[in-house]
Image 1 (cartoon, rainbow, N blue to C red):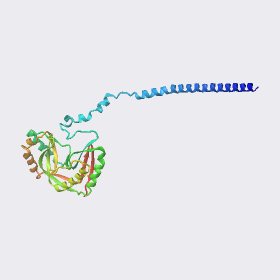
Image 2: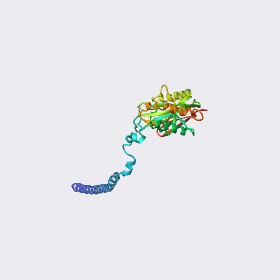
Image 3: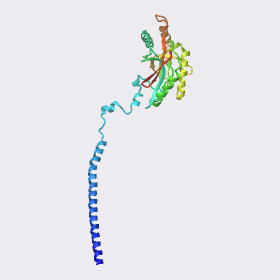
Image 4: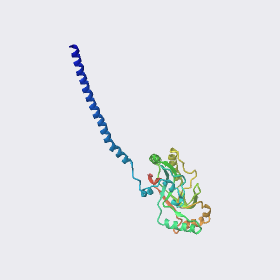
Length: 278
């Protein structure tokens, strides 16, 4: 009896085990089926991602608006009236200089036209400046993240500067260091001491940012016109006649008057203003 009882218990356990195995098998099948279903559901998502990664080509008209080699194109002298850069343009570099603006008097335009006409009669073709100013720094290169701190330093250094008036009345010919451009300028005859004080303040900021300071013995002037190349020798023939036009002006010698009420800093296409105390 004990053997029968033992045998009966073993059969029940075997059946129970078999039942559990069947149940497990069904679960495994269901899980396998679930994985397959999940795989089926994932396929469209993968296909969607692949479609999303397939981008349409950029229209040619847009590519023409933003050429890849834009910086090299801007280096061509033909795009700038034959002018060449003093330094190569690089992304993130901003050409920067400090200056005093000159606002021309009404009769200045007529006088400038006479001066350039006389130079043209001697075979020198000048291009008038688009705007007129007196430089207080050399043109330097600023990285973009320097712009704000550079101008804050300038503002702090000029806080004690006072307003003044200076005059320019003597024609002078200048050529850049690369001998690629010649300038016709009118040199300052009064106010040099105050201008030197401004340059010292600007130079302190230049030194702080390890940039080139102004010239040791500057000739402060307002550039009137420019031409391509070094034409200083050709201008010697007519500069005296041009100066006579200024000295023999109908109301006496014509002088450019600069009211130094504010300095400006041009950085790329941005201009910062620094008013000077009365």
